[in-house]
Image (cartoon, rainbow, N blue to C red; front, side, top):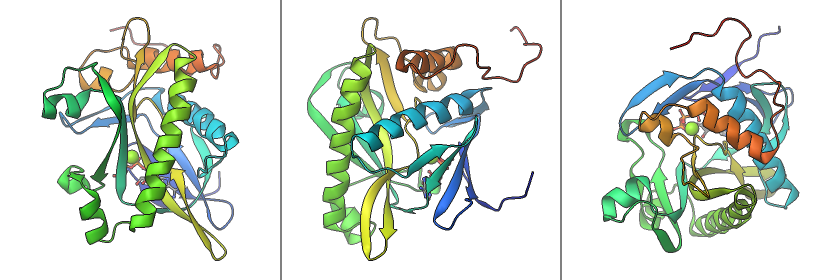
Length: 254
Ligand SMILES: Nc1ncnc2c1ncn2[C@@H]1O[C@H](COP(=O)(O)OP(=O)(O)OP(=O)(O)O)[C@@H](O)[C@H]1O
Ligand SMILES: [Mg+2]
């Protein structure tokens, strides 16, 4: 295999230089990390599932005319993407109270919010991604006011479309995190959806049973993470049941 230049290695993914200028290869690892409580574990096959789920979601968004960085999937763990200038914000959209919102504001988890709520967090590992307001974002120059408007409009479109898409397969889109970037095309610049959309970065609950089908299973030591991600993929109709997500071989029974 020819050597590629590694541009960045994060907690869950690696970015390599792409085959053409302006492209990158996004590689999904099995590493699973949460901030609260702080812990990491390698969960076999998670990267393969996230690559497929994110491919599916981004392809659907592209088809809807919602701009994303996604070009195409390359193999089990990798996809070709357009390189963007990442805006250092995590944009969270919430439909139902859960996680930090439920805790901070004393709202019972599962309460349907009066309307969808958008929150911003500053992407900074040393600071554990603190929550920030639009005032902070513009004062520190992380994004311009017009860009914040574009990001919010994008986030709402993604939320509306994906809420319907997941509801159609019996899943409630409780909340999710996205990252946006600036894509330069000639003299033009536009804000596009970057990074990933997977059960690592969204809360997905079964519509009937409210069973968790996302990274909260790891966060809360519930087990069954891979099975839950597989079920999300299966419901979306994207996983070939026979395709192995783990290397073939003996399986350790715990
Ligand atoms: N199209 C893109 N162009 C450039 N960078 C991207 C693009 N899409 C995602 N990224 C960046 O690639 C990295 C993906 O790696 P990963 O998700 O593992 O990072 P992380 O450990 O979560 O750290 P970070 O706090 O930087 O997100 C992120 O930093 C993300 O912002
Ligand atoms: Mg990340």
